[in-house]
Length: 110
Length: 120
Image (cartoon, rainbow over all chains, first blue to last red; front, side, top):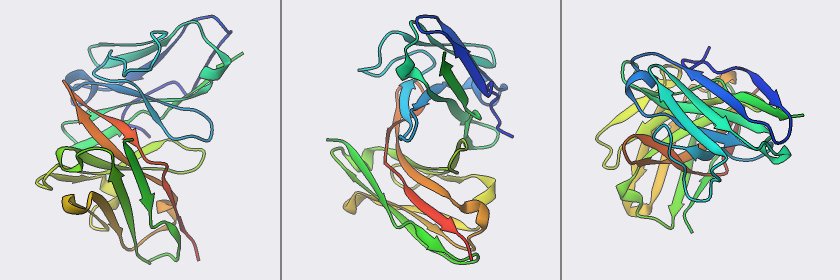
């Protein structure tokens, strides 16, 4: 059972927009910055979003992040088949003194 | 090129020990905190341990406390994870990851991982 809750899977058609939620509490998402990681099949996790809504250089603006209260959201617009991957949210948990990840969301582009 | 390369994984019997290493290059290692993260094939990411730049702050996930020791040698640009009393549920790919900090902390560089298999 992960500390951060993500939907196990989401799906949408090419060109559509999808959102992935990440729910926590006041000791993690509510009071710390959230980052998102993309793991394409058979590859290493890659930083997608940091500080809730910032994109590292090289990440297209089709990817966006937001946070409200104890929930964070990753948005992906203009879906492409190459976006099929597992997506993880993560943040520091002040009460646990531990980094916590969501359980991951498997994105399928139909 | 910024790079992290893990090594030291392998097959070990339950109760055995193993030390993982992570060699850093292409950046000033001593100015970054570092994490170990593991992933059971087909499962999600699990954070294992964090060590601060000067080793002043060290944290572990509850499941490895008392069995694992994280350390670093800034002169050798290297990160380590000593694992003892290994159990079957420690079987995973172990990644080292650099912790970057802007407003918050996040992992911006990941190694390719080293596989630990605990089995008799």
